[in-house]
Image (cartoon, rainbow, N blue to C red; front, side, top):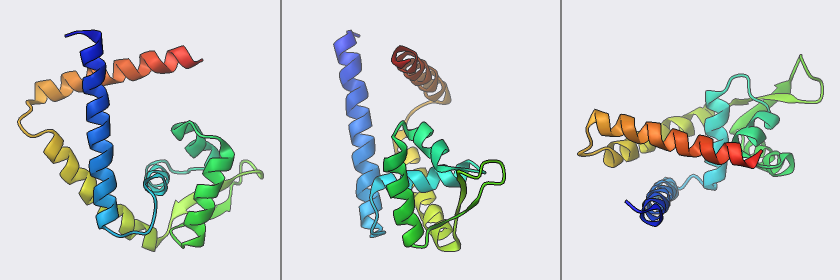
Length: 144
């Protein structure tokens, strides 16, 4: 397969996946942007989690993440508590209301994963993961 065709296939997959998840999130009528959902997922997975952790994971500047976090706090979906190890930062956690949203989103993610993997063998999935991880590593190493 040519390099161009490989890249186009990858772009197509990313576009279709993002569109699918975006549409499903909109159908849930959560009143939040997909980036807010991503931030909530990060906070749920990484415990303890700070705004710096989120900025690093998303490769966004702290000001962008601060705005996202502030909106989620205002909407009662996350809380912040002092970080005992660093007085300049706060630990973020999901509220009960936010956890309800995380559970709903997790179901959407599972359905999407199931659709994506339909008719794929476990070997194909493993090989795809290996190749995708290697490509991401190659791109990350070029940025530094």
